[in-house]
Length: 116
Image (cartoon, rainbow, N blue to C red):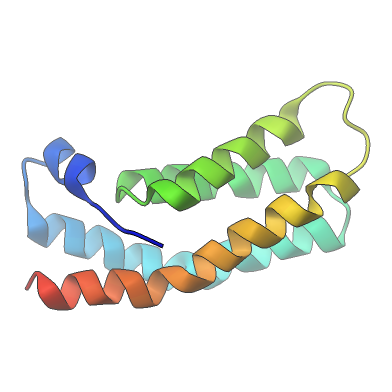
């Protein structure tokens, strides 16, 4: 996975200190995001899955983590579509998003180390 925070930095006047703070919070919250996604899937709770995806979308977009943001947005939109009754079709999408989130701490920590 590639991380390019250019857009995020542009939104915050190129303040690397602020971005580092936002990334640190994101890394801390990653286990909670993955737990909520997995719990919603395990409990077959389509509404909770959409909410969890929405949270990941916003948090990852704020730091310019496009891979997670895009996957989360697709999952959220799919969960919110009317007529959807079963969560089974979202299990693979959820697993992909969880996998990306599990990769994030290492990639984001590398960026922090390279941008003190």
